[in-house]
Image 1 (cartoon, rainbow, N blue to C red):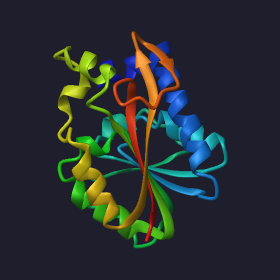
Image 2: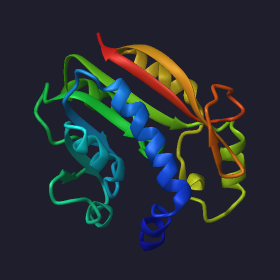
Image 3: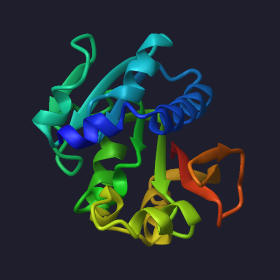
Length: 197
């Protein structure tokens, strides 16, 4: 975990987090009470909080949550069994975390349960078709090799059961350079957004 936290401080990852944060701030307008599932040390969540959003972070790792600011409410728990009442949040976000959840279908069920009517889901998924993904997975130590679900279509279908869905390719990355791109071969992220039906 220490290596992961150290890598989060690199200039490359800081820039990635900044771009993800920019996207989320733009897309979370009118949604103030946010649950971030698989938040780790809550780096992006800190940025959301700094922009006036109320954020709760959920992660299975107590150690990862130890890196979060005390001002961010964090809960140790799983995406498949969220310990929150029904209709608790305006939006639920997964920043490159849903594909690592054992049972993403159960996680989507729980997401729909804890969201208020008209609530929003944003699932930022790692795009396995991208050059970035392929390059990273060549390194045996890459966290991307721990991904459990590389097929995006079944995840989108599961989300579509509860949400009206729109998708985007986002964030071109090549040779550690970031740029705007919606090209499936260059965009590191495939983003599924939806409003609760």
